[in-house]
Length: 239
Image (cartoon, rainbow, N blue to C red; front, side, top):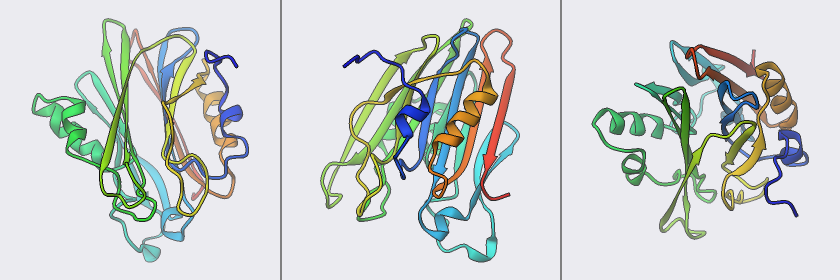
């Protein structure tokens, strides 16, 4: 077993029908770009009734067919926002919690200490979050998962991970280990994953690796570390 192997998205995701929502953060092999990926999946009609939409520098989940909305509380949120030299990406409305904390001079950790897993028993979906900080032509990043400490959702365990960006290496955090009833939460530390120099191949490889029935939307952003230029790609199953 090579613990330092850097598998592809296909190697990690093949055969996994339901990893849920996922965040990938890393650096391209040429060292020129920070890469951020976020995808959503869904099993219910309510979860599948979504698209990604970009408004300015922010990315939101939005309702696709307003006539079919059941409960928007856990499925409509800002997934990606910027604050000064930092980029926030999460799987829920804790994006705004982190943004508000940073605006008040507090930290990523301070923000997430206020939050816990989603109140969707019996799954108790974990909240996953990432924060990139850009400085001096490079970046570092943090990732976090907040998940239930028992099957009843009686208490929350909070985990934080800190990374110095390395060329070709990314880290992948998703809400669920696999499909199930209830759905088992993600276990262990964020997975190592390969980052591609080309945003189009990164986007396509990741999209094709997600289960065709359950995938909904994917957003990929590359940020050039010298110029700050942003390149985006978006995939919505609902067009």
